[in-house]
Length: 97
Figure 1 (cartoon, one colour):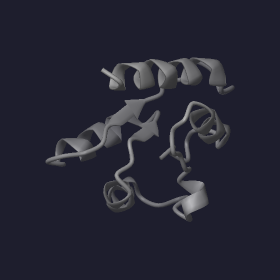
Figure 2 (tube, one colour; figure 1 turned 120 degrees about the vertical axis):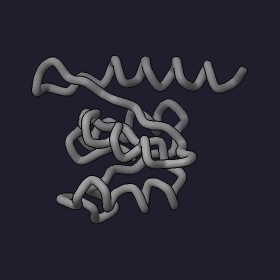
Figure 3 (cartoon, helix red, strand yellow; figure 1 turned 90 degrees about the vertical axis):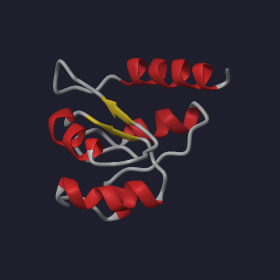
């Protein structure tokens, strides 16, 4: 699941790389408090992609098990999908071992 602080186009990048993906906004969770996202993340068994490392690192520390948390840091306001696509490819290759 992609956080609302990141562009919806990243979902398409993930899908093109063979991952199932969705966006917080598309699930009707735009504007929801961070802690309320943990239920849908847990029940959907989603890896969560966000640039809000500070808050979600704290929330994930409370979880006994989870599918993963990816911090996506941007240097500019403009999102470039190529590095995200590379990350997904690298992750896919690593998971096949």
